[in-house]
Amino acid sequence: METVNILDVTLTNESTGHVFSQWSEECGSLNGLFRYLQREYGRCTSKVYRDLADGTTEVSGWFFEKIDRYADTNEPYKRGAWCSIRSYQSHSLD
Image (tube, rainbow, N blue to C red; front, side, top):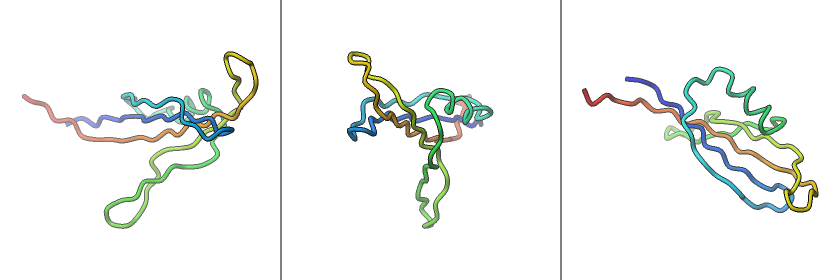
């Protein structure tokens, strides 16, 4: 069995409250992931939590934000990035 890590990313315009992009991708190793996300999406302002079946919570990711600019008007806006990690065990068919 092999652990597979999936990164879920949701980009938001925090100035208007709109979601403008969402995707998931396999991210392989988690080593260096936080630093990569910081470089890509700005400063980390919060952790993202997931509720578990037993009533507890666990950290599942981070929220990042930075000032970005609209491509058409070059006006600034605050861009948020909700980044969560899901892991599961893959099973070989052999």
